[in-house]
Image (tube, rainbow, N blue to C red):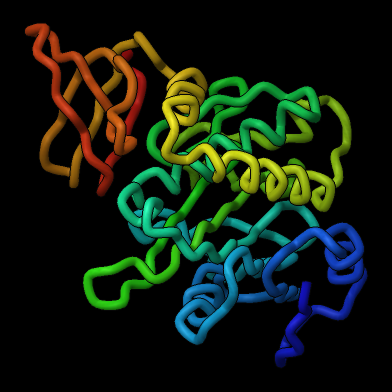
Length: 271
């Protein structure tokens, strides 16, 4: 594991904790920040200049954290996990780029389970605890022509109550890991558990087991939901499961089945 020396890199206790927890474990490089605009932006720039596979960018605080569809992600210091992992896909993985969001979400579900916290995945990229949002995944790809050169898997996890945004700033109910666990939980130990789960799950990314486990963790499975696609089309139907590329399979009221692809998607339970 190589810690890159860069202007603004963290030299506080957070940095030391991260380095100690990941020493001898992280195969790629490591960049740790006290504060940064966006870990995904830093990781995308690093990936484009040759960062090795499984390199990590992590920050104690994000001032301009990004979620899907340009939304901001609230990351106050000392309260949340905010990191971006650079993955260089194999030829087989390049054919299944749509599964990387599931890789992040399912790995977080696995990691939380080791701490006794049950979680579900709100397709395509949110992780829920007790029906409330506790984490989001943002996957972005660096392309070389028509080929995916690298994938940046960004993750934001509300660990403590201080990480939960004010209610007026939410478009979906939110919670944190500590509230659902009923006890304090180390961000750094959770980080290590997530990375371990990603390493394990990545080996089965293209296997039927991966898709089966992702489906099993889906929130609202066999329930009626509303799905807004690009703010234009609205579908209401029962969540049946996933296609092999990670797309959502929805049964409409007339009993026909439609496939919702990745993109500008909002999913909500129908009331």
